[in-house]
Structures are given as C-alpha cells and as structure tokens.
Image (tube, one colour):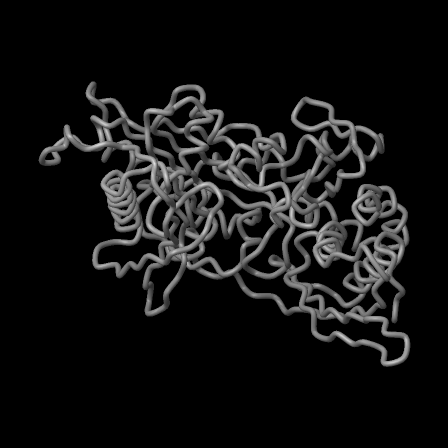
Length: 451
C-alpha cells in the first residue's frame, strides 16, 4: 500500500541522500530546523515498528504515514514562543477574551489551554465530533496517523468533548494541527488553530430578555436550515446572536474599527447552523474563521444536557499573514533573525508590517511520471517532496495531465519551485535534491518515471 511505503521513506531517503551532494546534505539540517535529528526522528530511524513521540511509544501499522519532516515539527509549539508572530496573535486574542468576558468573581470567564498534546485518538478527532465513518476528512491521504488508533490532531476541535466532559463551559484551545495538503505559499503540513467554545444554561441565555422565564432551550421538532430539531428558535437565535457579536468584537479588536463583515452559511458536522466569517480587508473579501451552534448530540454526550452553546475555530497563520503582511507560510518556521526581530515589540497590540527579506531567485525543475494503476494519492507525492526537499520547496504545481490514447495510462507532470528564504541556491544543489525526489517517487509510490 502507498501509505505503508511512506512509512519507509526515512530508510529509503537515507540511502538516496548519500548520493546527493555535500551542499544538499548540509542543507537538510537547515530545512528541518535543527542541527541534529529530534528524539522522535531518531527513534523512527532506529526502529521501523515503533515511533517514539513526546515520551510515548506507538506501534506502527498499515495506517502509519508520518514523515520525518512532520515529526521534526512536533513539540515546537510556535504559538508559545514569546514574540513569535503566532504568539502575538494568540496573546492578543487571549487578552481580548480575558478583558471582555469576566465571571461573577471578576475572574476571566474563558479558560485557556495552549499546551495540550497534539497526539489524539481517532475517536477524539472524528467520532466525538459526529464526523461520519465514511467522511472524506478521515482519509489517510489527508491526515497523519501514528497507527489506526492514534494520530496527530487535524484540528483543535479534537479536545472539545474532553473539556466539556470535564465540566468546562467556556474555554479557548490553541495548538499545532497537522494535515497533508498541497504545497504553496499558503499551505504547510503543520499550522496552528485557536478554538473557542461557550455553553449557556437557560438562566444565562434568557437573562435580561423580556418574559425570559417562560422561554425554553429545548423542544422536539424538525431540523431546518435555521435550527436543530432539539433547539427552540428563540434559543438558537440568541446563541447565534451572541456568537456573531463575540466574533465581531474579536476581529474589530484585531483589525480595527470600520471593518466590513459578512456571514456565509456553510456546513460542519459538529455545528448547525454553521457560518464562515469573511472580512473586507483592503478591498478584498477574506474568509477568516468558521463557527456555529454546537450540535446538541455532541453536547449531550459530553454530559452537558441542560446547556446549549457555540463554537468557533480560526487559523493563527491565516490571521498573522493578513495582519502582518507575511507572504509565505514557511517564514513562520524561519530562524532568521531578520524575520524574528520584527516581532519583538513592547506592546502585543502594536502594529507590525513585515518588511520582506531579500527574495532570492527561484529554481524550477519538472518531474513527469506514469501513475500506477491504483493507490496513487496526490498528497502522498506532496508529502514525499516535503520530506526530501524540506522548506527548500516553495510550491509544487500540477502543470500537465496526459492520458495515452492506446494504453489509457495517465501521466502527471509537476513543476517544483525551489527557493531558499535566506540565500541563493545553485542549480547543482537543487539538482541533488530533485534527483533524490525522482528516485524516491519511483521506489515509494510505484510510479514509472519519465525522466
């Protein structure tokens, strides 16, 4: 199987790397952000059957598809590194919620969890959120699995059920999340999310509402596009109003007054009704977060049957790239002092506009191959390129698809753009990386090269 083959990428890569130039081997340390392999990477290289991650051991099986590139990022916690741009966004959101929402004792209403382990069970990541067993978001091609039971979380929502079950009714969760995706300036296999949840009792929701004591949270009716079958329309509209008001205040705090906002109906398995918030920023409509009224089945299963609530999730990189005008998502992993020093500000609310580093020239190389008759997933190819090329790879574009008229075989041609963010690359060192990609794609993905 393709994913089983990907488990062997490290062993194969070691052999391929020996064929590469000295410049290429030197680059790998920079690409993976460390002068030596992390404990997780070293453990995987030493044993093909067990992965050591964050102090725990996980047996590998045919679901395992973690690459060294991704494992090297686990535990970095950029959102907790002081003065990192993602830390600035997190702290601004935290400060806003702490100041705006306080309990009766004048203590913050929302608890914040920003150091929960990114290793979760598939039940936490999917089933607890009512994601169907056949939902495409579960595919191995889109996620990073340690084995059939454990995975790297694909969203911070994976912690919702546990925190609700613990009795919390207002909290923020911040953390790194992992998804296999395309390669370009907006996508990276590791990014960071901030999740917010708030539940209301009948008294809390209807307090201050005329004749509120006669209103109810729940009823048995039919589901519509506007509400769930167990929610009254009055309760749904009040929760929706509070959610949208809360998020409008948040983005106003982040972006400033006068921001034009619109709400777009959408679908999430764990909320209904569901919305995406878009803002008009510098004349362009941008989607910045998703949200909705929590599915009551989820809330009930966590033991909060007498409450109703909302949830939202946003991407820290997405906000930081917009707010600070950061053009390439790889920059968040840069250790270049010219990048990092721009965010060392005395006030987290201070306006920062990223001053671009000198953009070094790109080097492009194409790769063409015949696809195998089955089990080819494009994200497997992207993951392999990331594993070998590291952050040297700026983007990968599928530029041509060809079907042979007689054999009906399909060929893909991809253009790989290589660009170092801190220096000029030579064609020789790029060629070494590209050759390693060519050899690995044949050995690991079962394609037939056309190079």
